[in-house]
Length: 225
Image (cartoon, rainbow, N blue to C red; front, side, top):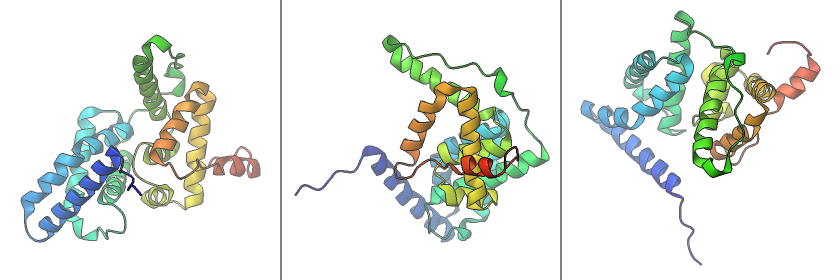
């Protein structure tokens, strides 16, 4: 019986995970320059994550640098129960949230985001890119309390439990805010439903989108979660 081959993305993730573990071990053993490998692998993702919080490239780079400093100082706290990237993203999210409480970013109203147009079949690739950009802009227009769960769950490696811990919320509350964010996006941009489902199936192929908000809103109509 043939052994099933791993997908390219899985091979890349496995390779990164092994490199992360090796570099962490080297740093903890006294080889400080080994931390540069961690920075090279994760600088882009952390800057992109920070940009989704603050929408300013320069500030995003500064926030990512602060996250790396925190990671350097706290490497021994990684318990290896989850992947290094999950631990790093959770740490970075805490840094970004703390900084934004001190210096809030300017918010853009959802009404200012254009409705995505229907895809033209002769320009599928271009239409897909435009639609993805609209998704990003629409998510950034969400109120922060709903934007952060969407960002952590759909655009990064955090599952519900890890993202809830990162935000310091009970899992039920996190699921409710995540579902509320999705509901706001669907209400304002009906055509984004497919994009949300696509992102969800690729980020979390074995789980289903939380629907806690629907239940919570029925129990407490008009109450903000």
